[in-house]
Amino acid sequence: MSLLPILRFPDVRLKKIAAPVINIDDGIRKLVADMAETMYEAPGIGLAATQVDVHKQVVVIDISEEKNDLRVFINPRLENCTGAQTGEEGCLSVPGIYDKVERAERVTVHYLDLDGKTQRLDAEGLLAVCIQHELDHLNGKVFVDHLSQLKQTRIKSKLAKQARVTA
Ligand code: K2U
Ligand code: ZN
Image (cartoon, rainbow, N blue to C red; front, side, top):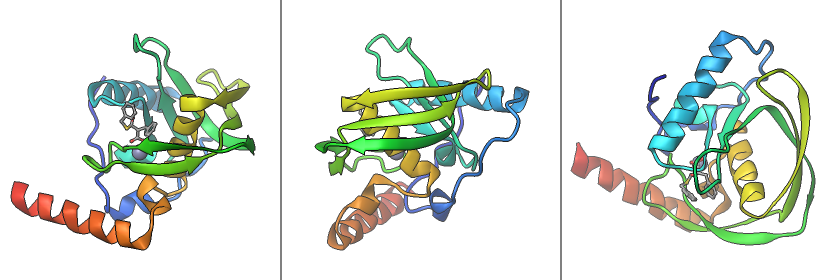
């Protein structure tokens, strides 16, 4: 397994729309293993393939305390988004930035598992938030895109200043 470099906002590649996976082959299985290792090492509770510059509809999530409950979503589709919840979000592609985002409280997600079997999951709470956050990435969106233009401008200038300092 390998650690993969994570794209940093406002990298334009984070805006790319991920393509559906056609064949779940050894390449996809290696991508999932590398994404999971990268997520756990970050550490994070989710990671979308877009964030590691692979523009395929693949997401890994593990919200368990023990980090032993990896969920793999291939070609995920959201349905029945109901209710609303607002919570503070961060993102491995937007380090050091946190802000409130409104999401659906409950979602149903249809997807393929690593065996290519169609699955359906009803999720709520943090798992529902994480699923929506990751599926945003597959559609070329980061949580910052849900914030006001003023906040987005301030975030971009803060990150640009950080990049100059660390360069
Ligand atoms: O896509 C990512 O960058 C992964 C996010 C997922 C996430 C963001 C906000 C709310 C829920 C999930 C990272 O895991 S952000 C780091 C993090 C770590 C622990 C708990 C929440 C967020
Ligand atoms: Zn993110």
